[in-house]
Every structure is written in structure tokens, then in C-alpha cells.
Image (cartoon, rainbow, N blue to C red):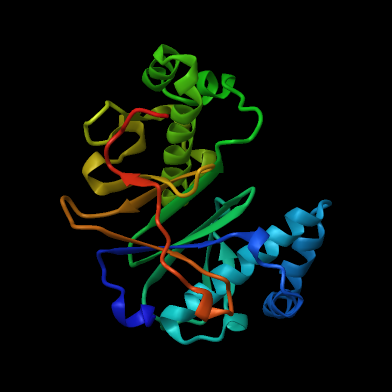
Length: 266
């Protein structure tokens, strides 16, 4: 697929890699060769092999995906962190105005790519054994916490992760991380109605400046995307699973659910 020629300003491309599927020693060696010395040092700081492996896949994914849009060899990308820690393209310069964001959790790595516009993505493993529900009282808005507590206990886990991924995606898209207090913006979820957001005046933001999307990527992985947009601008979302450096393995995947609407959790 020639992604560069098919990507339009209204597009979001979401690339997914599943680390457990990628174990070819030759590929893993090639991934290591793509990384800078600093990235290799960061990889080795992880004490568990599965975390080192996931970091390796994440670095390979972001480098090879950006190369699909530009023709730049994957090993030539250099990244910097903004003042809040968000990775951004440092070089090479003079390219198409690509924006990207990366997220990973147990079993999956995702990279979202857009043209010109701020984008954030978050993915979480909703099947992990424990979730700290007290985080909702601490970090969610009062309305979100009330909504969560009003749900039957069987539905709270799914709703918790819907709120959490949406909030993470937004603060990543803004590029300001947790310097944005999570309780100062609220997502409003009602069955069968479009997802809405509201902001505390202190954030100096407008609901019509953002596009949000909730996704059930696999049976266990929930995700959300936040994209800065102009009011009522169309958005097209494309999902692809890929094995970096093995383009013949790139295949369309069926996403279980990707919607503006909130439906009953199962």
C-alpha cells in the first residue's frame, strides 16, 4: 500500500503491532540496528525482557511508519522531547507536516499518524487483573466519577477505561501531559448519543476544536484518539496491523468497535 499518496488532511492512520507475534531473530536484530545509542540505553533500563521487547517493537514501529510517508530511511529519524516530555520529530526537516503519537500496553503497540494537526492516542489493557477505582475519585471530574459510581459494578471497568483512554489521548494531543489537570475537563457519555467533551475555562479550549474516537481494538485492548480539527471537519480513520520491515505482512484488521457513540458495555 502506498500510504504517502493515499493520506489526505482529513485522515488518521492507526498502525498496530502485536509484540507477541514478532519473534523472528533477523527482524529483531534489524530493529536494534535502527535505534540510536540513547534508545538502546533506554531499552536496557527495563528489567523485564517482555518490556525490553515491547520497547524495541515500539521504536521500530514509529520509525518505519514515518518512513512510509516520507521515503526517509527508518534509521535516520531523530526525535526530541518538548518541555512536557512529548516526543516530536527533530530531523530530518523540510518534510510533509507529519504528526504522530505512540502508545503501548501489554500485548500491543499503536502509532497514530496525521497531517499537520495535533494528535494523541492511548491504549490500555482492560483485562489486567486490577484497576485502581480510587483513581476515578482522584483524577476524574466530579460528573465522570458520579457516572462511574452510578453504573452496575459489572459495567464499571469498561467505563473506567473509556474515560481513562480519552483523557490520556487528549493531554497527549495537547502535548502538555499531566500539567493539564484531568479533573478540569469532562467527557459526557450517554447511550446512543454522540460523545461530548466540556472544558473548564482555565484550559482555554473549545469542544468544537477536537475530534474524539473510542475504539475496541481487540477483545482486551481499549483505545482512544484525540485529533485537533476545525469545526465539523470530516475525519477518516484507517486501521492497519503491521510487522515493521515486513510490509507484505501489513493487513487490514477488523476493529471490534470504533464509534462516537457510547453503547452498553458487555
